[in-house]
Amino acid sequence: MARHHICIVFAAALILFVVSAKKSGDVTELQIGVKHKPESCTIQAHKGDRIKVHYRGSLTNGEVFDSSFERGDPIEFELGTGQVIKGWDQGLLGMCVGEKRKLKIPAKLGYGAQGSPPRIPGGATLIFDTELVSVNGKSSDGDAGSEL
Image (cartoon, rainbow, N blue to C red; front, side):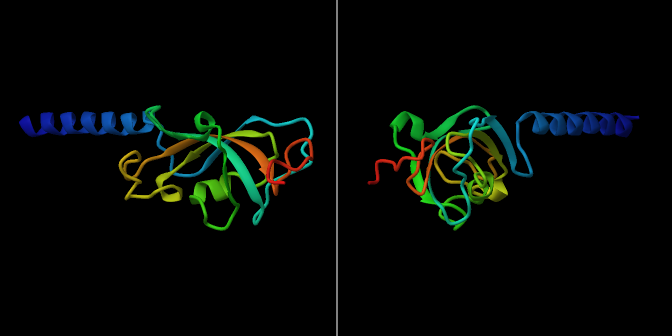
């Protein structure tokens, strides 16, 4: 009888653990949500393009670990060349200048099991609110950005 009771308690605890893990917001694959897409999409980001992106990065508990929006300084990098985490190299492809996306990035496409201490724990799912500012120095109106 006691053994049966222990099995039931263990099973209930296991179910609770699985349900709470699902609620935490962790993902196993990259999820891309388009929050805003401009009516006209004349400039898109492709592999090898030099892009500028505003972002707000947070953990699944809502804690923001970094934000270019608050600094007023978007990050600039070459897309698809490993200069940023894999989730960004994949999640920003095909994005239009002026488009806003929410990326949910699993640890394997982010900072992995080691994380990025002290702000990002190992195995963390990352959530990024992103906005593509320019591609190869061109903003949404087709003018060159401040680089010139």
